[in-house]
Image (cartoon, rainbow, N blue to C red; front, top):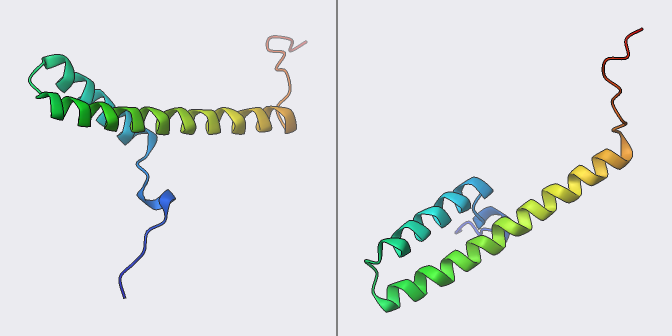
Length: 80
């Protein structure tokens, strides 16, 4: 029986998506892509950018939850 993958399993990590996005930008800046290749690269770059933005927003939300629930202001240097 073939293994089915969920969307979460097939999504690249933030780091791998960012690295691929940087590669796409470099290739496009080099000016060596045909128009069709440029359009394909642009579409993929837009997908990766959206993915990275969503992952960053999720991480930011998790930090807000942690700060609201457990973290308090740190008063450093007041060791009297």
